[in-house]
Length: 403
Ligand SMILES: *[C@@H]1O[C@H](CO)[C@@H](O)[C@H](O)[C@H]1NC(C)=O
Ligand SMILES: *[C@@H]1O[C@H](CO)[C@@H](O)[C@H](O)[C@H]1NC(C)=O
Ligand SMILES: *[C@@H]1O[C@H](CO)[C@@H](O)[C@H](O)[C@H]1NC(C)=O
Ligand SMILES: *[C@@H]1O[C@H](CO)[C@@H](O)[C@H](O)[C@H]1NC(C)=O
Image 1 (cartoon, helix red, strand yellow):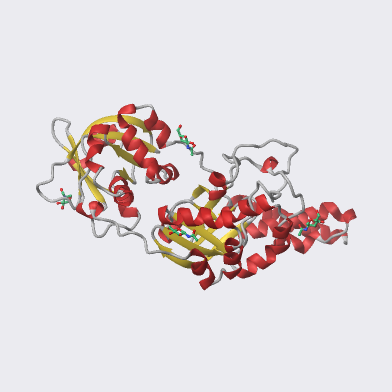
Image 2 (cartoon, protein in one colour):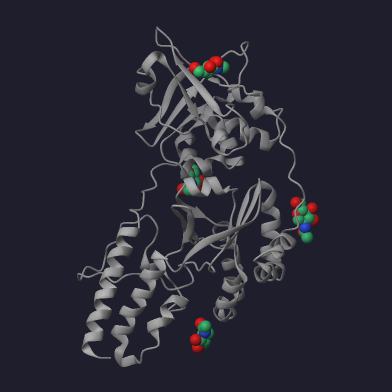
């Protein structure tokens, strides 16, 4: 390589790294855990248990700027008659997608406002039924009522503030469960779905074969699909590109990496586009204690999944019908638990810069082969040019981040 080429490479690398840094958002610190907050208050144990059972706790923890309207154990008795999916709808009406601390409630201009709830945000609610009216009366009483409630409905009354972390989450107690005919409507059982058939239909034939060929994986997916499952299936070309590495994995790692493509919750496209953050996968819960999560990001219309090893983009919807969504993605997802993290080198000799919430580069275990097809452009350089190969690989990685 000629010297001038080195400089060009270096300049490109620096530019690419700068852009990559600009493009990567500051990781938001995970600031609360609704299960933990409510665990300190046994009078809300039923409400808390139901948030977990309906998986709403998971959705709440992923949100920023929300208000949870909790009811005590006595008030929860009113929900016993409903099925779990209906309870999920009703309780999601109790999660307002805005921050209402006690102070803000008291200071409402004109004494009233309407807030969208998570029920509205999921798209399960029609019309205005996912909205909650909040009215602050003279004398300090504050009422909450679902916007689709009829005139005979007794509003729920504000009781007290349980926990406030401005402006991330407010947890308030209200006197009774919010009544809403739409939220209380029976949720039809999900139509039976043949997962492998669904996956085979478009884009993901090869991934379907991998799933069908692994009994543990198939069973875990099949057991989860009726309770909320989002599957990111790599397109056939991505499976083919990854095949040599896949073959090299141990049986356990194969199971883990397939489960890594499954998130045990339902995400509509709207939700993915409006909601950034780390998601846990079935590999986390089914396989080992390690993290096995990835970062969902969106950039205009694109939704990307960033694992720190590879960034994959959603290219198509294969199937979307609550509680199951399947999206085709451009690359095989590689967890940092199994593959080397692709990371821009730090310019200054400052080895430890661990600030992010997820374990950083030093967390990878096995397999140290420089990963990712994007790195191939420069990685073929002979050993003597190792440093430059690294720079070239960095450019590849940085470009992959930007792609
Ligand atoms: C939230 O807190 C509960 C109870 O302390 C704990 O079991 C759970 O693992 C926590 N969840 C997360 C995501 O940290
Ligand atoms: C909620 O507020 C809107 C607008 O102020 C009003 O039109 C509606 O009647 C209210 N609904 C209930 C149930 O109070
Ligand atoms: C998949 O799960 C369904 C229940 O949702 C069950 O009826 C079916 O037998 C399972 N299929 C297999 C092949 O285990
Ligand atoms: C597979 O493993 C062998 C032996 O460790 C190694 O030489 C080879 O490069 C690996 N192949 C891939 C694609 O990782």
